[in-house]
Length: 254
Image (cartoon, rainbow, N blue to C red):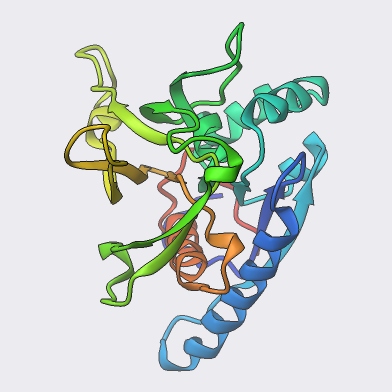
């Protein structure tokens, strides 16, 4: 089936349900889908119907057109995913099938190519983002905080209240090697959001939101707010990605 110029009628979005804010993500996804549906009367292209599911098995993952990796504890998530036989299917989903994927906090760590400040022995990663992340950038859980973020991709002046809980940051963008494919070189990491560095740790800003091709990552937890804007934006990206057929091996439900 050729995916170009096909409008998906049904889109299944999964939330990896091994740990973390699974229900919170699904709640905001449902609100975002309702908002998109209400806006569809103003668009010549109808909004697809969305189904949101929890993903704990490879069979459930295979149903998904897009996926969210929620916050939690990235080392634990990797261990559980390995025990359930999900790590390699997740890598296939993200890097081979190239389906739209969003990671928040621990999910961002899982989607990175490399991570520092890991526990002894390191941890397994899924990859998909050519970045190195620093885990627990802002300290322990009792040092969690909420900060105003200016996110230009939302195309609104109103700041987004970012919830940071043992949050990672992107400390390095890994440049594609000369041997990388043309597609890999074309899909460089985009910085979509920053936040001022903590006092005493240097000048400038930390990178807290990035996108590369089909993969999006945030250091903070949008699902722990009642602000639906990022979920609305991401669902629009999912629809556009599937509609254009940019992913390799994308299967549209029609």
